[in-house]
Image (tube, rainbow, N blue to C red; front, side, top):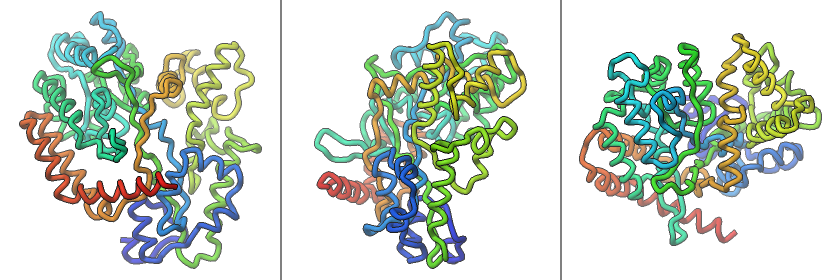
Length: 449
């Protein structure tokens, strides 16, 4: 309603589609020259860490129309989170292949891991949304070389949409079998993240795919209720046992645009400069401006919240190096703040924010250790389409996304697998073919540069 009325604030955070709408309507400032003039060298360095993609997405008709708040692709890497206390109770080992994941899921469903004598647990937890940062399917499907929702390159140098590829059909077939076996909640198609998190909290699910922060939510909820519950992040695995590719979708989805004819459009750039400098620059004061002990998330009070794209992995590596040396005294900034939480957890402190969850991320065997492994093994599969939405995406993508999720859910819950083939046909007929042409036209133009 705000965009339609034209009654905009001086600075507005928008997604890529909204940015294009504002630019096409002539409602926002051209930031091209302003960025070059006012962005500090440090700001330019940080905002370029994900390559040119974020700026391509903010560029319309050759002009930079907003400042991208660059997201971190690596932070969207997926892990298998497993209740290791259940593994140990049932005499199981961490998975090496997807067959192992299925065996663990089956055991968690059928072998009464909570010991209450009732068949009331599920192996794999997923939500009605299917995708996202927690209780999602991206990591599971990657084990079948299936990469839904991102654009990947085929063997002919063309970009194809991952959701349409036959590997997805194979993954859906396996999920359908798991559903028939009772390993998935029969009502998952009606439950959002909060409802599934409640099941995890109550000790009814022992396996889920999600990002590094899952130990803080939803898994910490389970730990709060059951101090014997233990979860650990493991690398995603493949059907063959070969090292998997870890899909990383294009992660910059917030852009700061400035209303046309504002007196000081450069102010938003100065906000970026200040936030980045005071938290990670030469004059950083991290414990004051980002995460002071008395106010955990004070950084969220800033109008902009940009950050180095690998800050969490960097912090882990600094902590790990200090652990090896046996000397934590040299840690500073974010690494020092995190280590304080790890020390508090090790001391048995009960107060504080999700101390167990923090240890499950940054401890020696935490999620960041797995991310470090992914990075060193060159396992990341970056999405290839890293630009703003194409014209047909603006008009049709939401419809196509709903179609996809509806069909995939039906298949998992028992509809014939042939519905996948019909979905591919319908997706193309309802605008997907046009999107594919537009995406490849963009890709061809970028390869010429």
